[in-house]
Length: 187
Ligand SMILES: Cc1cc2nc3c(=O)[nH]c(=O)nc-3n(C[C@H](O)[C@H](O)[C@H](O)COP(=O)(O)O)c2cc1C
Image 1 (cartoon, rainbow, N blue to C red):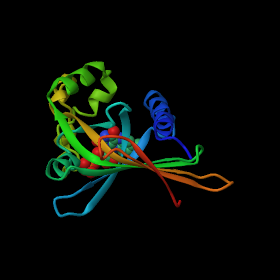
Image 2 (cartoon, protein in one colour):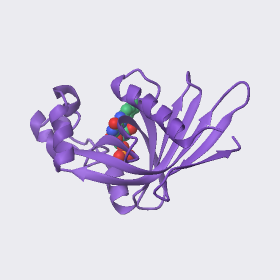
Image 3 (cartoon, rainbow, N blue to C red):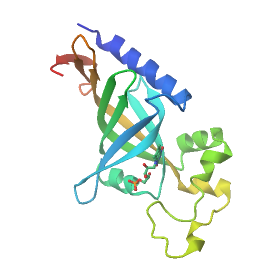
Image 4 (tube, helix red, strand yellow):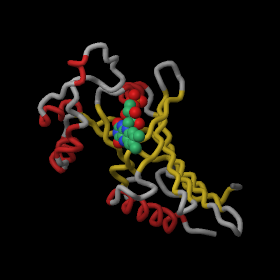
């Protein structure tokens, strides 16, 4: 039987590698929110932070995007990673909160170079109808900070599925009681 802390440390090591390398298979995740109508909405996002000690996972986003409104109304999210070469699926469930114009967003913004900052410097919000080409214009890069936010999810469970030729292995790591527990479950 695998140990919960050892498995978490192994996951954390992989996420740290993914945060540093754009080519890592765990670099992107499918992040699902619940819309105002109670419907699932899923999109790809780049992993920006994994905090093994505090059980937090983080992503950057445009504050004007739909997902921010979803999380503000309903914090329940699910995050799905698939590492094909590593034969690993990780399904993370938790409650998200949005950081906007606070010390956390300012520190992250100050560490960013111009290229990613530019993503937040579009005049129009993500999903906006482009009925006029002026809506495609950019504002000053530094003003993009007004559109920058960080989604931080407090993890309640990690569903770990390793596809092994000798037999798949699946574990549920649970943090809900404030401590860490591990259940070996059917793949
Ligand atoms: C490879 C890839 C990486 C992406 N990374 C992010 C990201 O880190 N943050 C983000 O807000 N959107 C990211 N997007 C765009 C989202 O998938 C989505 O289209 C956009 O955020 C609007 O989502 P929403 O309308 O559901 O809020 C990424 C898309 C792709 C294809």
